[in-house]
Length: 384
Ligand SMILES: [Zn+2]
Image 1 (cartoon, rainbow, N blue to C red):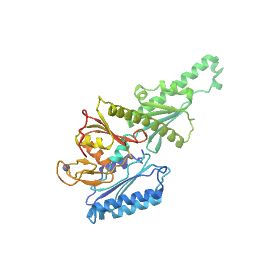
Image 2 (cartoon, helix red, strand yellow):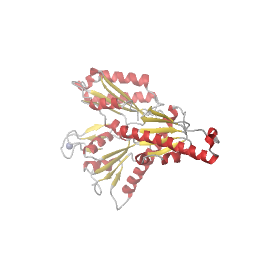
Image 3 (tube, helix red, strand yellow):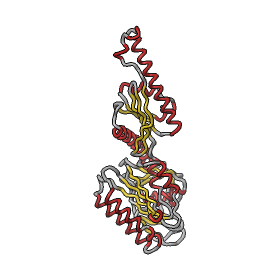
Image 4 (tube, protein in one colour):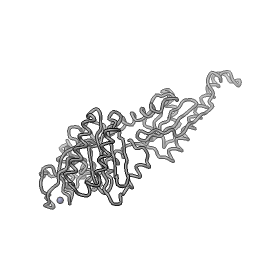
């Protein structure tokens, strides 16, 4: 969604500090919901919560410098108009520092651990497509690859297809033959673009193909696509061949968002249908039943608003989750409170190999925030 480079992400995934703790920060920086001042306060509260958890232990001392750097970044560089979220990973002792500006809002989280907490980032990435957009006309084509906010010109094609005005009466052709000749040349040009697209697809494996051109040319062009490309061709828009890169990026991301919203709404609709059906009992809605289902390892697909937050408790030894319980019914130990139980739920659900489906855009799940498709019928209504 915002990855500056795949190299950066790879570096993050492989990062294991030698002898210090790493801090990971996620912030919802949606300027339409929060002011910069409010975001700064949220960050301070997250830090305060961690401080009360760790006190003067090494973990917290290790990340004091990270906290200062994060604070500076937020006050100096945070762009709440352009980006909806921010993720920072830092280990000052080893000079490790990475910033990700996000197009979607993550939950507010601050963790201190032996490795960066990357699950939320990977979840965001998991539904981010590598896009190929090609802009074409009768003579030219420009092929771009897009990942997150980055657009790169991959290839340009230029063919000497004749112009209509020159060909009429040219080479002794009559008008209809001239038109036919010209159209064949254009189809050849389209085929050449399609071949190039296939070559890029096979080497770079993009997920979605978008096409920009004149409305009347799009269908004819799409017909020339290889079957592999037809499968991932997901939409078109009207843009001239010399369109600005920023416009191509914006149009492509708008189309991608539209596709994501459609998929989200289909998923939520399926969840609600099953949850509300008296005969199905194959889904649950809301935090309470989702926790019950998870404690029974009965979740097949976890569906939740990415920025949904709910305070809860967990067992540090067996990961039993609760809202009000004080003691773990399995281990008898005291449950620990956390400001946001949602990513604890995600972590535990991942451990039982549930599919994790975060909602980025749709508002259809706003009332419940979370729900799950079950593995088998119903949940036991235990107190949690
Ligand atoms: Zn336990």
